[in-house]
Amino acid sequence: MPRHFLRDDDLTPAEQAEVLDLADQFKADPLGSDALAGPKAVAVLFEKNSTRTRLSFEVGIAQLGGHPVVVDGRMMQLGREETIEDTSRVLSRYVDAVVWRTFAQARIDAMASVSRVPVINALTDEFHPCQVLADLQTIRERHGKLEGLTLTYLGDGANNMAHSLMVGGVTAGMHVRIGAPENFRPLDWVLAAAKARAAETGGSVELFSTPEAAVDGADVLVTDAWTSMGQENDGKDRVSPFRPFQVNAELLAATGKSDTSVLHCLPAHRGMEITDEVIDGPASAVFDEAENRLHAQKALLAWLVRRP
Ligand code: CP
Ligand code: NVA
Image (tube, rainbow, N blue to C red; front, top):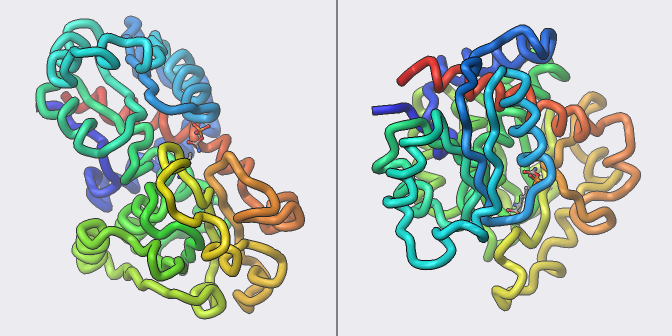
C-alpha cells in the first residue's frame, strides 16, 4: 500500500521532522535532487481555484526532474458521472502520485482508498496539510525551533487551516490555540485527533472565544479568510462575528512579545482578517511562507515516492 498525505497526522512526529529537514535542504539547493527523474509523472488536479498550490507543485515537480500533469478537475469526467474510485484506478495506471484539491475530505479518502500511488491533499474543506508543512518550515526559520512554541490561530476555527494547524502543530510539539467566535469552533473529531496527537508529543490544543486571551504570550499569530472556498453562500454572517479577531497592530501588541511572527496562507483579504500594516510589517513572514510551499511540497513528494 502506498503512503498518502491526506491529513497532517498521516506523518508521525519523526516523519514530519524528516520532511521539514528535507525541505530546508531543498531550499538551500533547489536543483539538488532528481527524486522524480525518469520522468515520474504527477497528476495535479483542482476542483477549486488556486494560485500558490498550482504554481508551487508544477514548478517543484519540474525541479525534481518529474512531469507535472495539471488538470482543472471541473473539466474531467469526474465532474460528470465517473466515480472517484474509477478515476483513481485509471490515474494509478498513468502517474506516480496524485495531488488533489477538492471539497469534502471523504472525496480524497475515496481517491486514496483504491490508489496504487501516493495521494496528496492539496486542500479539502477539512484540511490543508501541505500549507501547514510550509508554515512549520517558516516558523522554524524564524524561531529556530517548533517544540514548545505557542501558535494562535484567529478566525474560522472550523476551517481547513484551523484544523491543519491544530493537528500539524501539535505533531511538532507546539501549543496551538484557536481563537474563534462561538459558532465557528473546530469540528469535534478533529479536536479529538489533535488532542490524541498532542498526548504523544507534549503539545496542546486550547480553544478561546476572546482574541486577547488567545494571543497573550503567543510566538506566532496565524489567520485566514473568514469565508473559505465553497462557503460563499452558506447563509452565515461571516464578517461581524470575526471583526474582533482581525490581526492588527493592537492584537499583535497584545501578545506582549517583541518577536511574534505572523502567518497567513494567502490569499489575504486586506482590511478584513489582517491589516496592511501587519501583513506588510516586520512581523510578517507571509511571503516566506508562500515561498516555502515550493520547498516543503518537493520534500513531501520526494519522501513519499521513495516509500511505495
Ligand atoms: N494558500 C494556498 O493554498 O493558496 P492557493 O489557494 O492560491 O493555492
Ligand atoms: N481556508 C481557505 C484557504 C485558502 C488557501 C479556503 O479554503 O478557501
